[in-house]
Length: 274
Length: 274
Image 1 (cartoon, rainbow over the protein chains, first blue to last red):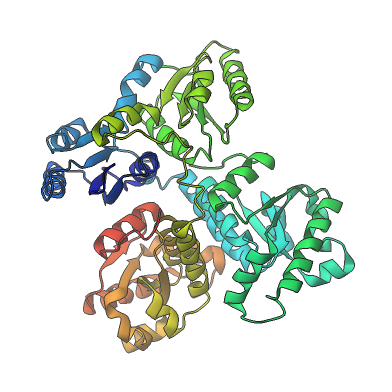
Image 2 (image 1 turned 180 degrees about the horizontal axis):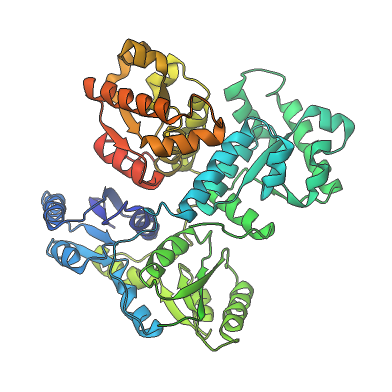
């Protein structure tokens, strides 16, 4: 078991986000090891690659423990420079290009990654969807509900807004959010504004004790944040969803990435953009 | 040159987001090929793996063109099932575990990826930062400016809000946004509320013609959206930033991923969470 900290570098000619995600995920497979993670984005010239090599070698120096380097560099001239560093070089990108070229029977472009630099239609769709989520958060018009790909319903502070934002940012999905409020529970009916959009509804719920904590941050010691009220609201919101055949998810122990992915799957939504 | 569409599957025992990002990025290296991309998340039982194999083989059927499969499966029992499908299997995860085990001299946990399922302190930090960005968007108190890791300044609709949200969601950075408004331009001085926080400021600017298009969507044919006004606001905001030594970036041709990454680098911010 190693107790010393080992450096891990994420190196990319673009943002480095893909290298970070894959590399960090790989590191979580080695829980016993302590890692110091450093991202070096925009390594797109030989000079910057030389500087990266210096940083990697310096990280190796204090105790001789070789860093790990996760690279998504496309340019082989740059990656060959990085490989001169005293480190384990893990090529997250080139490793797969050769088998893909063989399978597809075409040569790759060897152009730098554009998955996060594209300002084309996909990117604009994602930004439209983020702005849609923000606008919907301030209150929805019928026009917005019509435009929505999905409408998340649930009690105040159960996680609708961050999930809508993530659906927009990651998948280009226009997600509106519509709160279920005490008035709906008194009527024991979904808000009538949603009547025309029943097939777009997706419910979120949450454990009452967690809701108490979240609401207390916003309005400490209020009736709104009381356990009694949170329990009642959650119970009635779930009853409403069941009564109206609205599929729903518990947000308590799920990340927004998981929530969004499950909603995409269960609501049969198609990714609108990369 | 292939004209037929080839299927590409992203398979994961969790959300599949890492497989999608890496796989899609690899596909962009083969521009001549048309791909139909399908994500199969939460493949975490042999039965679901069998179903995935059926879907892959069905995608192969119509014209015999083998799909590509990008997998981040950790469980080797599940990946061995997927490998029975008639497809090119690209193992985005296991490919790197063996060299890492050799280098680190420890065995991997072989546990499913937790990079998007962690509800621990890192995840809560990210959600706090997203809520911080949302709250800041509604107007900032001094308390919020004090709490912010970075404060983005710029004219209305230049891209501050989505960039703040992304900084929060991806890096756990608390990013406030503060608009520069006509009153500031008349005084030719930064808002006095920012006086105590000069070292946290980072500027965003935008090409006036692009700003016109964005503002026209919000308030069509207004003075606010006119080319004359947009040109003046942008010119004076840049003058203010230069005069006050505030580093700034042009958002016109950069994605929020790129903007956030450059801001992290230039403002010397440290990722707060994965």
